[in-house]
Amino acid sequence: MIMSSLYTQICSGLLFPLHELGKGHHTLRVKRELERTQWWTAEKIRELQVNRLKDLLIHAGDRVPYYRELFAQIGFDPRGIRSLDDLSRLPLLTKDVIRANGLKLQAEGAKDVKRLSTTGSSGDPLQFYVGKARVSHDVAAKWRATRWWGVDIGDPEIVAWSSPIEISAQDRARQARDAVFRTRLLSTHALSPQKIDQFLDDIRAFRPRMLFGYPSSLALIAQRAKDRGLRMDDFGVKVAFVTAERTYPHQRDVITQVFNCPVANGYGGRDAGFIAHECPAGGLHITAEDIIVETVDSDGRPLPPGQAGEVVVTQLFTHDFPFVRYKNGDVAVLDNSACPCGRGLPLIKEVQGRTNDFLATEEGGKVHDVAFAMLLREMPGVRQFKIIQETLWLVRLQLVVEADFKESIQRPKIEQVFRHHLGERLQLDVEYVAGIEPERSGKYRYVVSHVAQ
Image 1 (tube, one colour):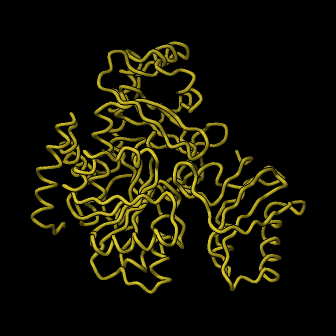
Image 2 (cartoon, rainbow, N blue to C red; image 1 turned 180 degrees about the vertical axis):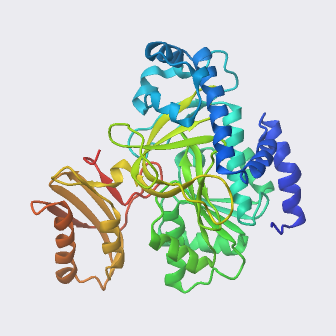
Image 3 (cartoon, rainbow, N blue to C red; image 1 turned 60 degrees about the vertical axis):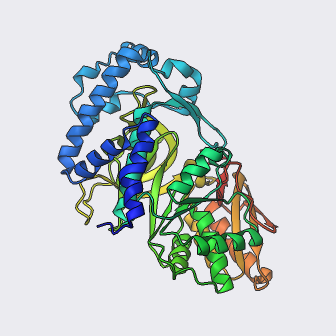
């Protein structure tokens, strides 16, 4: 149950719905539907998915040139859709396919579509188009998940964000909107100790009920407060929402410890939308009313729950520019168990990261980044790190260390673990740096492989 102030009730019940209607969005109606359907049985939710999938594919076959040609070429009739398994008859949609076909993926007669772009944190930014129905469902899905944690639109919120797309869009109109809805944006693109100290002062003065941002940024802010002995747990933060990056256990731990609040993971992206959100019972729930999630092996074959595979997303409200079986570049494990919260929404057991968050071995295998992250995080004197795999036999390790780092003792241990996982012929170049720079997107990526894919 949400115990909110009168101002929050006015914002969430009146001002924000009016704001969305003014943009041509039906967010409030969709949010109300989502709050009802989340309690449906898993079987009933699958029936809803099948019906919406069939509607999307019929529309795509009739109005979208790319799919009209594809369906004719492979002899696919969307009117014959009977189950979600029928999706596997269609090829995967990749970024290269989207780039090659461009406006052939846009529906004939589509109106009021908006061009968006990913940040290109993996080195390959993508441009695509979205319509107002997709935006309404994305915003409503995030809104529903926010309310799971007892907070709502209008509650004071700190947003620690560094994507140049959002930061550059902060014009006066957006600043005025943020002021009305009590949202404060902190640009975390370059986090010096002095800048973080200013952020800590701003947070204490603002007294937010929720935090939202990259886990790396919130963890760095929390760690600075911890190092200074500055209390940040005495003004009522109820939850920290993290998204856009893999959330490591040590990041979750320090955010929880410093702000005395749970950390709720959100998974998605500009291209695939808000895929899943974590509930207070710990389940990472797929927004199944809007999205179908599959995992596939390296040959594109569907995998059962419990096995790690590449994430494939079908966005059911992308009639203007369909995303059907879109491979977003992530690796995850699906879960067919039920969440204790009672929602019928399917679960993701684990999001393991980008496909190039794994390091490649000489034998053709892949090593999860956790194998190295846990070693370095627990090592005395290591403040930050970044692993860059240039080739199968060359890895660069950037380290930010403190005075208690004992190179003569610690470096042999590091080399032993890296060679154990990646091969005895490995050359490990250790670079001691003053700080780890974010990617152009503003995200902090701690493991990057140029050969893992």
